[in-house]
Amino acid sequence: MTVNGILWKLRTGAPWRDLPERYGLWQSVYDRFRRWQADGTWARLPEHVQVRDDVVGAVEWTVSVDSTVVRAHQHAAGAPKRGLRRPLLRPVRHSAAPADD
Image (tube, rainbow, N blue to C red; front, side, top):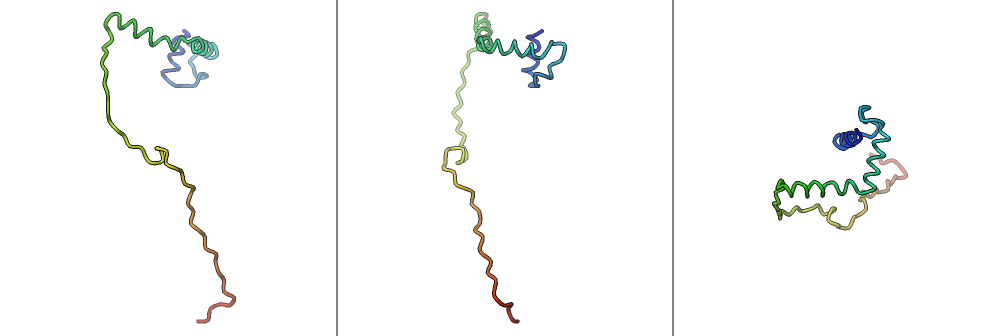
């Protein structure tokens, strides 16, 4: 049931603590996930599946190259950043006497 619990977590994106009880204690499932991550099981899994499917002819090796160019905004392209420009506050001048009208 541990594998099903890990797959449920990865599929839903839910926190480990929200793992349904039918998969066992969330801490146990999490520990197994971390052990498999540490020993490289998760890294080897896609390669194993790909080799297995290629042997039976289930993989179609099609390469697609896209030469689309997407321009980035100047701030995303490494342009120098400027400080925030704030309007200069002009000092308020008060006259000594009120204006005569």
